[in-house]
Image 1 (tube, rainbow, N blue to C red):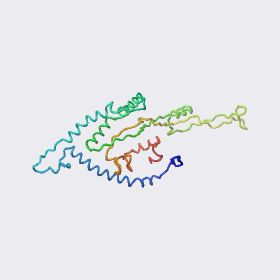
Image 2 (image 1 turned 90 degrees about the vertical axis):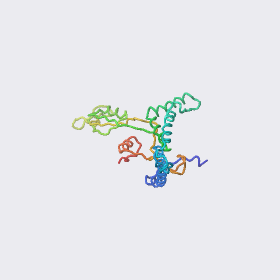
Image 3 (image 1 turned 30 degrees about the horizontal axis):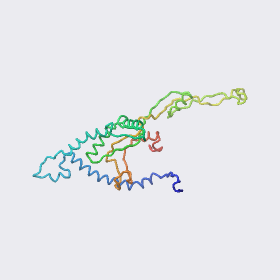
Image 4 (image 1 turned 120 degrees about the horizontal axis):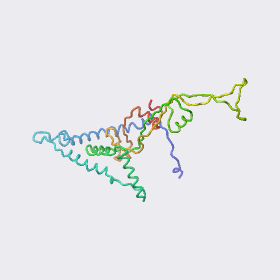
Length: 276
């Protein structure tokens, strides 16, 4: 019981140590992907009706027909239409939320809207089916995604209340100069103005507003689950299991622009200084 009551602890591992742990498994996964690539190349040759495909090239000699039957091509293309209609059909799947039938239907409609209207879901499914049928290898990735665009506003000057209202609306001040004024000092007991030895009113600096202001804001363009047909050349998994969730490593290699990294820093997805 004491063991079960222990709370999980947060472990911090340096990046170099993570690389040292992951690299051997990643190299094995890359080698395995190289073997799978050879299989996909053979499937493509069959689809393309090439006489160099395994199972055909030994017939490429006198006495045999020099015309390759388009059986594989016709089978693949013929299955695409039916499978595409099946996977994009409104009745393809249902969702149960306990005994609440209406809640399940609302959730099903939300999922379909997100896949087919909020993103190019039908196109993604067609790409995935093409890989499944043509290469016998298709990878459909489902992940949470957040995309933002940066909006900018510039002001010659802003009064202090206007600047506070701008910050309250989620804007950040990327550049500005302070406008500092003077305000009279009042006696805290009487509330009357205070004067120095020669009779001049005593004053203190006060922030009156800002000038030369540049404000930025991250505006979401997409927030939610996204589906992606993954290029097999960028997908790696270790060959120790046929179940991805049991493999020692599963990796998807993606390309990021420096601008994407900078925006990710601003949105909190990447650690500061990742851009540098």
